[in-house]
Image (cartoon, rainbow, N blue to C red; front, side):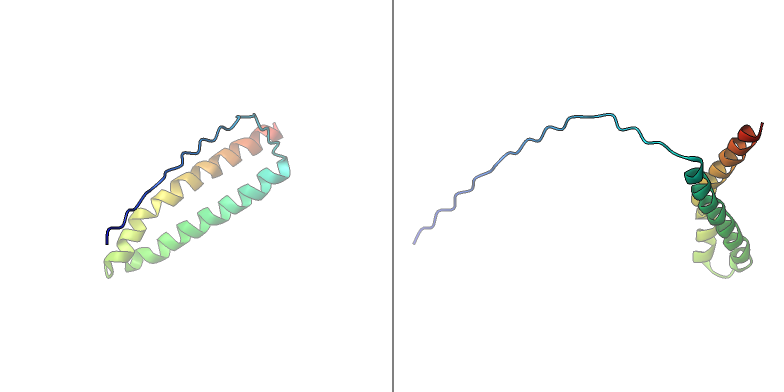
Length: 91
């Protein structure tokens, strides 16, 4: 008994047209996102400070504290840009 297996492959090509999409961001959107960023920054900084007392006891906590800068630095840049935006809109 000899069986034969045949395979067929289908190639599908898809072309997409690129179109420019403009998105308007209002001041209310900026305020909403900035509040979220500031709260997250405060939470990460507080968590880092609280856990720093336990860092010498647990290696995983020490690694978390060292790695938390990955989240803190971008949030800090967002905070600074919000401050600059607010100062620019006031002046």
